Length: 181
Image (cartoon, rainbow, N blue to C red):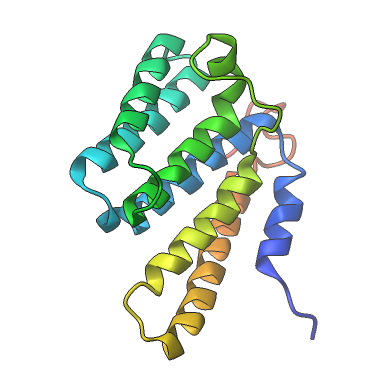
């Protein structure tokens, strides 16, 4: 029997999908982590992270504007702390997803400085796995913490893989005028 390494399979498949689906999954992965680890944040932090993701998603789907995203960007960073708290680390997933999908637009409009590296959906997925693992092990004693982290990380990768497979359209369905779902 061959062992299926879910995170490796996820990484391989994420490299094979189109940009539109990568963007949708980056948002879905970040939103899932915010839901799983939401108790780490105060209401204002949850709202800022959700608004940042939502306005970025709206921009990509044609229902938003760069001005709205710029405002959400500023609110997000005004709300987020210096990165030292658990809430700050959980909020970071929203920043990664926005960077994976809208970084160049934010740079072009002077909202943020130009960066050479742009994260992708795989970065969002990996960060999500780490955050969920840390959240699961937060109150465990040291003997259980490693096992809890491993299990939670694997479960998050599995959830991500299932979400990816569910989002892949049926081959030829769009060309035949069928609903891909």
